[in-house]
Length: 322
Image (cartoon, rainbow, N blue to C red; front, side, top):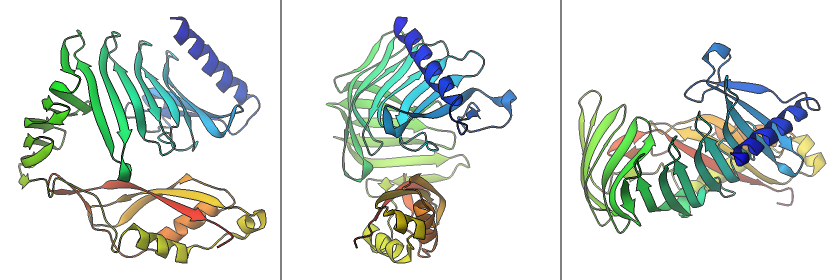
């Protein structure tokens, strides 16, 4: 296809011409799970991130399948170290070069508008419309889902949906007017479950984990977000009180927003604190130091009656005028 050939030429041209002018660009090898590996023998794909002169606030991101150099992923991202900070169009491809997904992301890295997904044989797998809501939640309208032979499963929100969160995390059940109704079942590596839904409201559910432990739940403890004592504004006040503006940032007059990401563990503690968006001159590191000083634990997240680890993002607004 001319389109794919052009893309491949464009990305190789952009990436490798940038290598000759920027020493900091480097190839990162990834294993089958997408985790960085230093063992090239374990490399399933490799990642290249470079500054895009046409988009000064963004980085051009691309992954290629190791060995074939077929494009795997293309996107613009805000943080060179965090691939999930995609903004605008993101494309992914199968090993054979066929388009896999076409998605759009907003400035909060949320899926928006119409998303397309295709099988390796070129048949459309799904067409969905995403509408972001408050608290990072999204409404998803299922326009179409079908199997690899083109047999339709869901049409305009009606049918039997088989939803694949990942290769080993699948749930299925009936949709009526784009709402869950009747019995839904699901399974993953660690558990399986059966649920009864009515007009998109969970009536009851039973899950069984890998040890055989059975947990019952309903809409009240089906999905509960982590909560900091006193609410997120209380956490922001503590972080603000702990924050020490770096001297270099003060001299440079830096103001704006730093974004941190972290995990809320099952015991309510915070771990894996990272900088998602930085103003430079030590502002991100100072924000991490301020958050690390927080001692009070969160109420942990709950999914299907069980405590779970939950990823969280915390924007921190910095201003020298305050």
